[in-house]
Structure formats: structure tokens, C-alpha cells
Length: 192
Image (tube, rainbow, N blue to C red):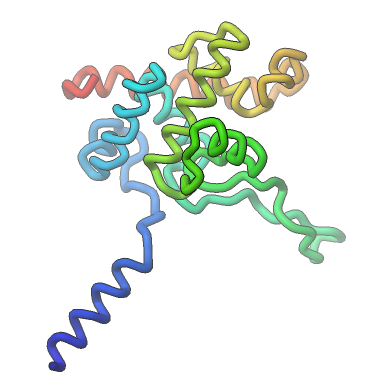
């Protein structure tokens, strides 16, 4: 009986928690795919469904959450010490905002989708980037401009809100460079 009680406690603990920690090596797409095959499988499904390449998804998730499933934006503080809430409602692998996530769940009819599940987060990203491609004409392979539209929202991107933000343009350049690095690595290890 004692053996079964220990097993039940172990199974209960395993089922309650999710592994939201980042993979060990975020600079190597092949190692990331080997360490977390479920991530790679989710991204391949998204690529097949929405046409957004794995390396573009990987680079965007790297920038948004560093592959931490329960990532949140930092707190804001008044007078440097009084917590005023988070900077935004962004959450999960894709750092989707509440309203955009709700729009995705409604349009996709995935009412049970969660931002801290990699399958749902990559599908959301594919859905969003597909819509960006349709509405703004940005190629799904264009990691830089897809990221800018992802960060600023499609309306903000169309207005050019990103053009006055040098820091954001630099971030988008890094996303593009990482996307190219991941593409080359995935090609070299035969995963592309």
C-alpha cells in the first residue's frame, strides 16, 4: 500500500506541473529541437498549416519569451517601490496580449487554447503572421517585418509606429539575424 501511495503522489505532482523552463541551448536550433522535440513538432505543424517557417517562429519566440512558457512582462512601479501591475497582459511563449489571444481563440474556435502550451502558442503565431501576410503583404519568411507587425500590431505597423523607435528596429534586426542563423542550423542538421 505504501508503494502505491508514493506512486500516486508522484503521478499527481507530475500532472499538476508543467515544464515552463527554457531549453538549455537557445543558440542552436538543432539542439533545441533535440532537447524539446515537442516544440519542434508544434512548429512543424504550424508551418504546414499557416506557412510560417520554423526558423521564423523560433526567432520570434526566442525574442518574446526565450522559450519560457509562463513568461510575463515585468511589473511597473510608482515611486520605484509601489507595484502598479504588469506592463501589459502579454503572457506565455508567444507573449500574446489578452485581447489578441481572445480574438485568436474565437476565430480558430480553440476556446481551450492556452498561451503556456507550445502547440497553442505556435498555432497562434502562425495565425497572426498569416493574417499579417494577407493584410499587409509581408512575406511569412520576412522575420524582421513580421516581428515589427507582431510587436506593434498590424494597425501600428501600417501607420509606421515602429519607424520612430530605434530600439525596436534594432530588436527586429536581431530577430532577423537569429532567424537566418536558425534556418542555416536546421538545414545543416537536416531538419529544414
